[in-house]
Length: 108
Image (cartoon, rainbow, N blue to C red; front, side):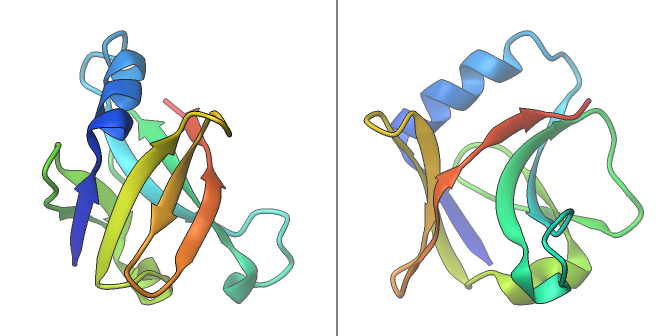
């Protein structure tokens, strides 16, 4: 899996992480309140520790945590961008937009 962050996304994330020493970034497939596992939504989380099922994904920015069992819901090539007009992140691949308004949530 290859994930690329745009310069705009890296700037916004770095602002949030600057106050979070020892925190990690996680690409989460969140199913809470969705009713079904296949109805989840992707989100960026700032976490203080990794969970048992988490793996490291290399990026052009910093390592990103992801649940190994949730990889099936993501594409092999993805880009995380920041959209200023929506004030949110966008997760996209060459084939589709996976989440046009992805949030960055501090869960630490």
